[in-house]
Amino acid sequence: MDPQRQDRGLRCGPAAGRRTAVAGRRGVSAGAPPAGVVASLYRHRGLVGVLVARDLKARYRGTFLGYLWSLLNPLLLLAVYAAVFTWVIPARATSNVPYPIFLFAGLLPWLFGSGALLDSAIVLADNGPLLRKVVCPPEVFPAVTVLSHLVHHLLALPVLLAATAVAAGMGLVRFPWTVVLLPFALFLWVLAVGGLSLAVAALAVHFRDLKDLLHNVLNLAFFATPIIYTLDKIPVRLLRRLIEANPVTPLIEVYRDVVLLGVVPSLLLWAWAAAVALVFWLAGAWVFSRLRETIAETV
Image 1 (cartoon, rainbow, N blue to C red):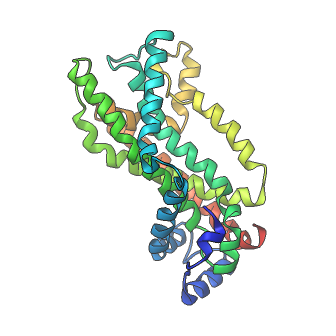
Image 2: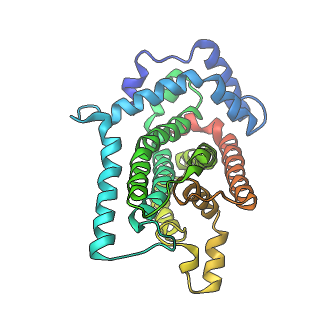
Image 3: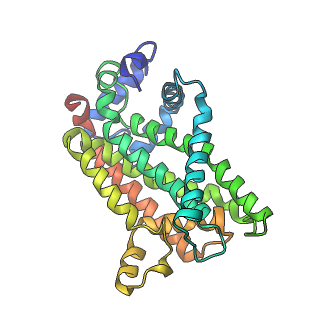
């Protein structure tokens, strides 16, 4: 987002500015964290919506196809995976699901989360002028980043569902009725990514090397998460246990179960994924609240 362009015509209002300034000096938004962060985001939900719309428009401004790229990018990605893992490096998932679709179903939520985290590492610095001039609450900007990436994720979902429908029409799989549970799986992803994005955004203001470090951590985490493989493919028992303990694993498993495999996740898996998402949110909101009062003067 262009801070100078956003600054023109954008106002949080004098009252909002005074509340934000007072809250900033206290180090919370409106009450103890994470309730203060939630209350602030709810109070400024109109501003969040405006900034999400501006971010989406700015992303495709000047392009010929515009928002169609949100559909074409995942479609082209799926086509590449289908070609590579069908003819160049034949691979199979444990289930009867074609491997390219299996891989794509794991990549979609991962790309949503990793993209939001990487953008969160620079969002406050990029919006420094807006933070200093308009006195907007800083938690708005990580929220905008997460919601913008969520919109792109939702625009890419039809590609996955269409590919699954084609595979079902060919008799390779059964179309998963469990897709009706997808909103619950997505909510857990948004909760987890939202919390982590808050922490990353606040920490990146004070530690400028965080973005480069985050790139490497995410690259390692990608291979430590069952995205390109299934847990039963891991031959070493200890390694399999370590990957099962990866907090992102239940989030990936729940998502892929409901959107592709047609499996209702067990209550234990749901509980594990929900606990991970809640811990990520609480931890991220706590870190953000502790550093919040120093953000505007540091960016």
